[in-house]
Amino acid sequence: MYIDLFAGSGGISLGLYKSGWTGLFAVEKNEDAFSTLKENLIVNRAHFQWPEWLPQTNIDINDLLINYEKEIMKLRGKVQLLVGGPPCQGFSMAGKRKGNDIRNQLYNSYIKFVEIVQPEMLFFENVHGFTQGFTRMYRGKKVKGEAYSYKLIKQVKKLGYNVDSDIILMSDYGVPQKRKRFILFATKKSDPEIFFEKLIKEKDAFLLEKNISTPVTVRDAIGDLEQRYGQVHSCDSPQYMNGIYGEITSNYQALMRANSNNLVPDSHRFVKHKLETRELFERIMNVSDESLRITPQMNLVSGLKKRGVTPLKEDCICSTITSIPDDFIHYSEPRVLTVREAARIQSFPDDYIFLGKYTTGGRLRRRDVPRYTQVANAVPPLFSELVGLVLREMINNE
Image (tube, rainbow, N blue to C red; front, side, top):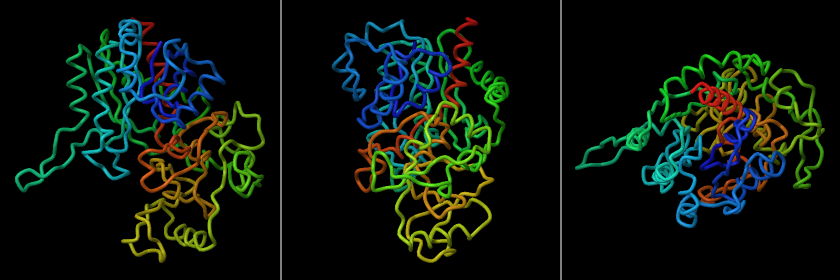
């Protein structure tokens, strides 16, 4: 039995479901992200044994700790696994790292929850930037502070856990993405190094069982979702067009489509680009044969105003998917990726449905969690499934 904190749209929980775990409940503050998790893992899969005292709705972890303190205390010693990691935006190298981002302090709430519940094992995930201290001015000089990863490890050890951590590259585990993540594993009963050793040892057999091999390229991931295969009106926003499936051309595509019986993929809605935008994208696509991030400062393309965009190449591995749609240009079509294409690159299967609005902008980015953000913030379910298998094996061997 496990609990998922900062669950988002359910990437970790989906992987644990596929590996045979049962969830107790999931904690997610945002309404749209929780609606996606609920639709897929509560309504469609009945994955959680949700307690009667906790409403099946979005909730902030601090409200949970305050309003249900007695109920949470009764869970002490009854939970095998706690998974999750606080929001990563304040730490991310892909965004504007801010040491004073209020979301950075949520790891304190995580520690408080661990202290109360005392689960047998902890699985914690965050961006690579979680291991980098923030720079601040001290007496006129720039001083680098202590990394949050180091703070977390110290506090978890104080609670009586054996702790180990590593930086994991998701492309090594069948995910078509150069996504580096800080992974912490802590346990009270065994050597935590065993977890990382087993991840590496069992990876090849896991991928063989899935019938995929690394690296998985962008075309391997989304080649059957190209716009040229045809379009229909989107079922959730008829003023937009939704792509339809093309022929399966890779084992990865077959894996993602295994349980999807629809002709029309969910959330495969194309953005309406102006002619000048498509022409700009075409110029960017022709700059290089490599998948390079193009910025205005490089003076390679006229008309580029945003801070940077990456034209994907069909035989490359995608860099880390972000919540901003126009950070990437499709490898063969002058357009941004759809939510479904981003979800494929994150290893979400096609029968996993995303709810809520598609995107947002400006100051609302700090509050809203639209579909693109739900996908980008998730832990890849394919990796999470292997994590779940390894953890089950460790428990069975104790």
